[in-house]
Image 1 (tube, one colour):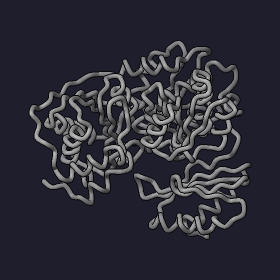
Image 2 (image 1 turned 90 degrees about the vertical axis):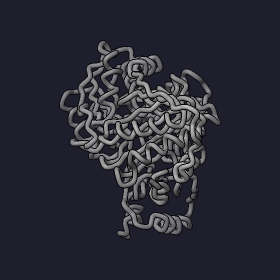
Image 3 (image 1 turned 120 degrees about the vertical axis):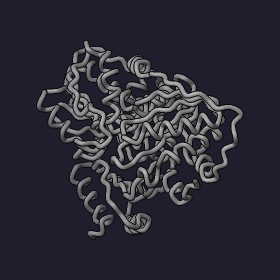
Image 4 (image 1 turned 60 degrees about the vertical axis):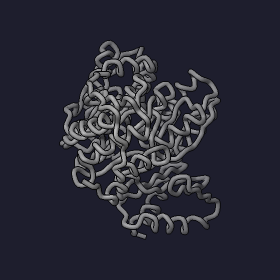
Length: 455
């Protein structure tokens, strides 16, 4: 049956496939994508994982059928976090596909694909070719049908992460909120090896793709409230919040206060630069000004890049960067095939805290230099028109510079903000930073009035 071209073009995004089920994404499209994936990457063997969404096992199986019909042997790792799929791709040396819609609501699903050793696939690096082959239904007939086998990599994944960031020192009480997502699958395997170092308090570890407690999107403040309350209630040293596919991690300190991902980026950058002095550290354009400042002070080389894992990973490969951090809670490690891992970022935070005599807020204070708004999302009918109007408003202000690396960034000595369209939802995303809280809040409210038509 022919696939709808408009639908296919709509769900093949900048660096993954993402759409609603079943009207945009279903088993048929997954099967066609599996066939096309094998042909485009030239794979004789691929690895496939999936998250806890009800549609994920079926679509992963359809993708595997398509891949095997194109001649590739398929290794199914079953339920997995996205970073567990990246581990499998790197560990086994195979191209991979992960079925997940990350933090998106329950009606969504998607496919993240990579070449062997977790090398990213985006529109400019193979995803457009896969899309076009899906539309053409042009996969070449294979000489053989590949096999489909199962292989559990969970314990090997846990051992690998702990080898990269061992947690040693004082024992910590840790609350982890999986949000009914895949950290409920991976955290027990990882923290089960840390009984002497960590007392784990699990929150919403039951796998449930309907997300009955809150959306598995910790960048939104309301989705951290249960974790914040639990940290204070049990007197925990730290709280960890993971998104649906557990490739992102956010921290909550012992007071129940949310920690900026920019702060965690700076902390991990210091730990990684200690291993490789003078190395390059990647930060996306929305991270705090404090990140490049601190990296430079530590003797490293900060490099600014666009938002998105395929862009970050490509820049890491070009610069041989040791580490990369994003405002959205993605953290990328050269020692982890340049892939992002929320769990590895969490282990770095735990390792640093276990070696520190004071509280988490005390440990992080020196990395927190400028107040940040966090990411604020607004539904906007005509995103391009709103961004153009904002540029016209601020482009003539004295002392302001503009750039268009990713959306619109407006910079001033006392403040800066970025406004950009989401790649996966009909939203404009705003991030604001100021020299002090009053400056940040005033600029935040001013720009939001432009975005939401309140000015």
